[in-house]
Amino acid sequence: MIDVDIRLAVEDRSRRFELAARFSTDAPFAALYGPSGAGKSLTLQAIAGLLRPDAGHVRLNGRTMFDAARGIDVPAPERRIGYLFQHYALFPHLSVRDNVAFGLKSWHRRRLSREEDAQVQALLENFGLESLAASRPAKLSGGQQQRVALARALACRPQVLLLDEPFAALHPMLRSALRAELAQVRQRWNIPVLMITHDAEDVIALADVAFVYEHGQVVREVNLQQATSRELMTQALTGEQARPQTMRHGVLRRLLEGTGGTA
Ligand SMILES: Nc1ncnc2c1ncn2[C@@H]1O[C@H](COP(=O)(O)OP(=O)(O)OP(=O)(O)O)[C@@H](O)[C@H]1O
Image 1 (tube, rainbow, N blue to C red):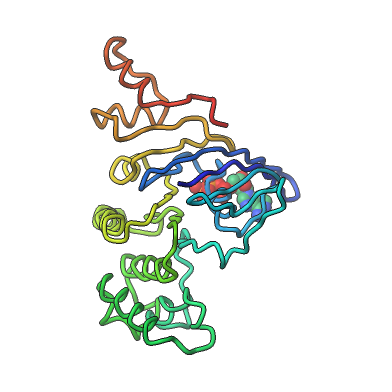
Image 2: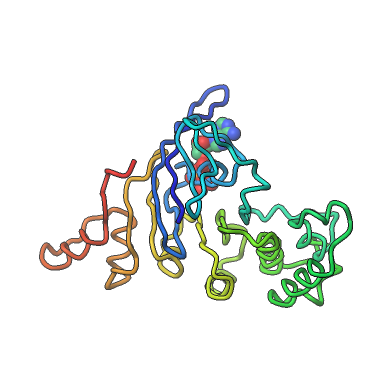
């Protein structure tokens, strides 16, 4: 269960942005969907403990990671969260194997246990990266880099996997192959996933539920499992009204739970 209710403000010299995001879900695969600059990445960073909200709470699987009122703020490394950054943030000077192992605490002492070594090896095999283990990230394709980043995010055996625009850095032709890859990750690793995207196709292909962001708030919750057609799913995500007034309208309304009331 991911339970988020946070408020925070960020500002640079000329602008101020206020985030007031609230949602909770126990869906295996949830999406944060919305336009650029709506506050999705800030939400992920707050969940991971990379950013401290001004108020509210973050709870994962019943455990409080952050609670402003109770003074709880679990440090990022102790939250056991796998984080796939927008452009993967692989370490250019490290091999594929070391990039994957980086998520393990003992890597920093340069001494992996036998079990950890086996775990890294299993991840490399799972993602088809064995033959690339000694290569540097710059020598890899976009799809291979994404697989390294995914393997690294999974190395700490996370309790939740956060994906920030996992397809943004990829050529469009690779997107459907990598969607299939993520669908497999979902099945094989059985870890709840929270994914950011501004592409409705990603949501429809992968997510059970989507939280629609606008201007720093969650304005709609869309249950994709109840959707009967692609068209209705897209309408529910984008907030467009269904044109025919009859039965479809009722279906669309059921897809949209808590319109406007979740922020
Ligand atoms: N550290 C920061 N300091 C000041 N402003 C920030 C900071 N980080 C983000 N912002 C601003 O907060 C707003 C929300 O940013 P955020 O990255 O959460 O958007 P997003 O929905 O993830 O967008 P995208 O899909 O483009 O990544 C943007 O206007 C951004 O410029």
